[in-house]
Image: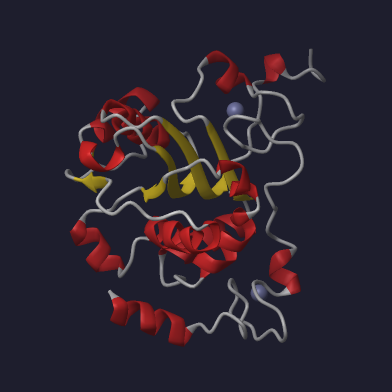
Length: 242
Ligand SMILES: [Zn+2]
Ligand SMILES: [Zn+2]
């Protein structure tokens, strides 16, 4: 893994090229101005629980109706337009983007200073080998350096391959995922945890893994992602339409 990490770092020196288009930039880290304009930061009004961008700072309807298993979630950017491309790149060859995201997230995670350790959504060893790295793990390690909170090795394992999720309903997705992840009680029992992943879309993965962590004795979980989708309220609940 070290070798692959070294290659990734060598091909994309983060100080000299834009993390998204690869164009040379000077004297700054991250994205060139053109790409930065296409990425929406997940700042301003967000749901205080799931952390998704909202129209107002109040609890989103989904969190109101069904409190998530995690205590609170934050994410760096909005999963749309340039943000979607950035996440795609982070998963395929753009390992260096871990620092871009961790820099954006470290301030937001200061409120999670009571966490005992960081764990990440695992990949099967086969998938990790194929991709060269697990981007959620890279994010966990980059955050660990900045927050001074250790990564809990072996906290979670992927024990079963997950079938294609695209055509499944929310319920079927959860069923499909439930048996795929196992947490180690010895590692997580009694702990307050930060769990990292690349994206939060439906929140199903977070829900399933946080349920498993709690089942194995985890006390409290904060969920941290590089990106999350914007929360769009159903039309009937849109105050402008009502
Ligand atoms: Zn660029
Ligand atoms: Zn919410």
